[in-house]
Image (tube, rainbow, N blue to C red; front, side, top):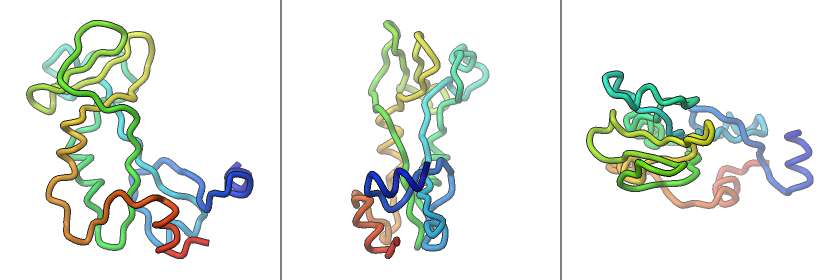
Length: 149
């Protein structure tokens, strides 16, 4: 499948879900490590939101922070789907992005979707980046800089 996607769609790398940073060595495999940032039930076991029927627990901001601050020479691709703000307690899609981070959750009452994430946590994770971190580079530009075949 990776060969087909690369040759027929013009991509240099296939996608592999992983929490590891990409390096010049790892991309030689033909795959780009992509980290899926998931919403889901809150992480505070004392709260009712920790019992929500979701596939994942909400990705803690500390985990996201660590991921988006790679060591020099690392290349990370965090995958987000939809960012939300504040709280919404009715309707199919519900979330809470207020209060302590351990009480944050996103929930789809119509299924197991965890594709919402709190915007304040997303933007907060990128605070205090080291000076060597470059942001907003298109994948093609990074592949060219890294001489990806």
